[in-house]
Amino acid sequence: MSPAEALRSELLRAIRDNLRDGASQLARRALDALARYAEAPEGALDDRKAALLAFADELGALRPSMVAIPNLVSRWCDAVRDFDGPAEALGPFARTQAQAVRTWADGARDATVRATLAQLEGAQRILTHSTSSTVLEVLKRLPPSRTEVIVTESRPGREGWELGATLAAQGHRVSYITDAQGGLFTAQADAVLVGADALLADGTLVNKAGTYLLALAARDQNVPFWVCAESFKCTPTPAHTFALEERSGSELGPPPVPGLKARNLYFEMTPPRLITGWLSNEPLAPRFAPSRA
Image 1 (cartoon, rainbow, N blue to C red):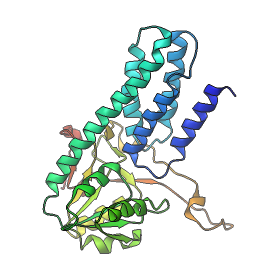
Image 2: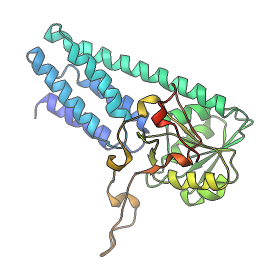
Image 3: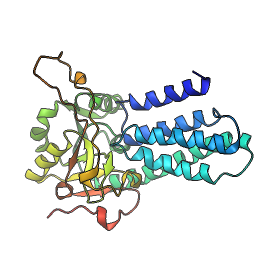
Image 4: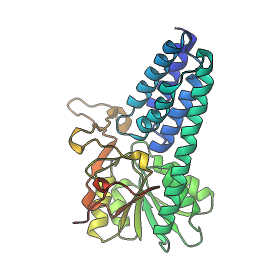
């Protein structure tokens, strides 16, 4: 295996096997991977372009439920396709463009955080599920003396633990609960706040499994259910064709038993009728507007 092929395999594996980060952060890691791989291909300009774009396609397809990855990667691809300079200048250009897209994504996150903080003003107890770098940034900026955060375990990865530990280390009051207690604690919350892995064409939310049950509990108990997500999470893909990622049942813990099949669908869909609203960096198109009907 050549050094370029070894690097490519290493970078793809790191994205594929990362179960800790949310969609936005993983998309940023994909951009970092593009930057690292930018100068690996050799040969004529067209050959280098083809290798970079093929790698980008592979990155974009690794986590089908996280549309932020292909959406941000696609921005980078547009710039690389248009490059017409010397072959040896493509690598540095591609690396610079990866950083430029990352900077744009950071700006979208900051605007989303500001919109979310404005909506949550006065909320004293907020429940969240799974992990999201954007949601984490919102929660970090809430006044610790006046706000309690309820964090679900978010099995099987238990990424809620890391989010809760980060907040606790910064002085926030945090309650850490099992996923099964979500409905019970929703009744004690002023708002439920979740991130998103995708926002589909019909207004459906795709997020970590367990989100739908929290949305049902929030609706039943008249608690606002907010989705905090940048506009690059949107996709025109309809719900009936969207692929939900399923991982190995071995992640659920118990050893295999004859006749027992462990299912581990990592993501699920929440219909727009259960969503109070989407808090984003820009107004979402009408087709993405949630309905409470």
